[in-house]
Image 1 (cartoon, rainbow, N blue to C red):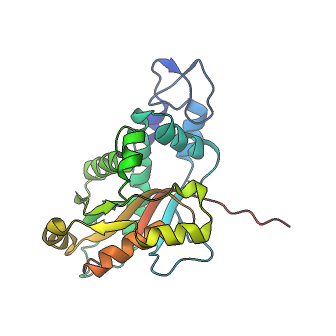
Image 2: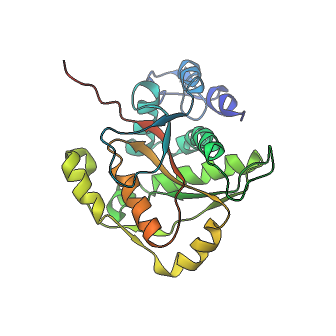
Image 3: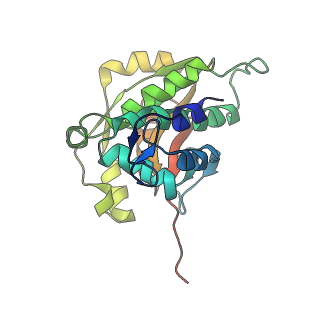
Amino acid sequence: MTGVWADLADLVLPAECAGCRVGRTALRHGVCVRCATALQLLRPTPVRPTPAPPGLPDCAALGGYEGELREALLTYKERGRHSLARPLGRLLAEVVAATAGAVSPVPPAPAGAPRAVLLIPVPGTAAAIRARHGDHLRRLARHTAHRLRASGWPVTLASPLRAQPRPDSATLDSAGRAAAAEAAFTLRERRLPALRRAAAGRVVIVLDDIVTTGVTLAAVTGVLRSAGVRVDAAAVLAATIRRVRR
């Protein structure tokens, strides 16, 4: 896929770079040329937390949760730079394309044909949506779907889940995240028939921005599977890198 560089690096009005936070530099969609180059060099890679929670599907990430990618995500989510949804969504589309291409099609797809994909973003809680002035992942998913469609992929975007109130995951340890995730999501029952129709014959991919322990992705996958919807994989922008102290 092409076009990410053009969205990240074309010159427009000066502002603070979302990747390195250097001010008074030329940007497009909030990222300077140096950070755009660093993001462009990232490639989707399979990732898996250790230990992986039961039910976690195969997962791929664009890169580690560090450097320019981490800063861009924080600027988008926590600092209100909603314009970053477009370039970040295009980067997430790269991960989806690589992930969907690795799933064995049932039934087999024609050689070289783009796979039909159903994208299901992890829903945000009402509190998080209010604090961030919108569902940041849903916004990101829309740009991801748009990019994939522009590249010839048949894509459907669905929001069949509702997020229940839960503690901020940043304040929890691994055990706390797992406990909170177990009851974190419920199915919108009225959307289930349409969801099952949409999932038939498509690669079903759950979207999130960051994977740390994997419990959120496993919880979402579990709710969908209990409703009879197969989940093939998960795609995220960044994976937290755990560093072992020696």
